[in-house]
Length: 251
Image: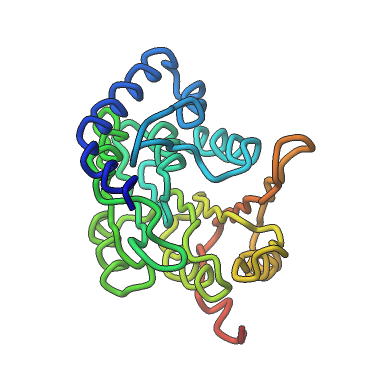
């Protein structure tokens, strides 16, 4: 309680220090490829203590390389938390990309970052990029409509789903946003390996369904890379992702 009060009082100076450190790291790590290290090297204070991704380093680096090659112009992230992966997508995306983050401000799979971090995350955008931070439920109709509006009804190149980890939650996000992705685009899901320690994390169950319906790739950490969590890639082909593929399934 006392710590949070102190953090709130120091939010502005801590944010200033955070921005200065981020800029210092970017000046040392000039290329997009080397800037993968920035979220891991960054050290802040208070509410800005870290932006390190909650990912297996090998897995997220492999995904980062793939997205660098894709150079997406329209990116959607569902679940932003510390902001580390959001930072990576701004670096991997095209210089004029539109990037949207949807993050639940409270609840079991929400509340990962306070409102005072919004201006800091806003500085992640580079060149002519436009970054939109939506702190709302990704499942809500109005949130989906807002995402469509921001992208001006244009198809998305890359979606990273790392929000609600229940079976129905991840399924809903995939079926809501997957069809927005163009053929040739990618949908990536985090936590595709079974989490026997946390029964509420059920992405692996939905992933097994996806593997039967689409061309996919699994990024599983190498031995010694830390805890293996797994990132699954769905390569969007042909007519794209269709909700009808799941209409006949229950649970």
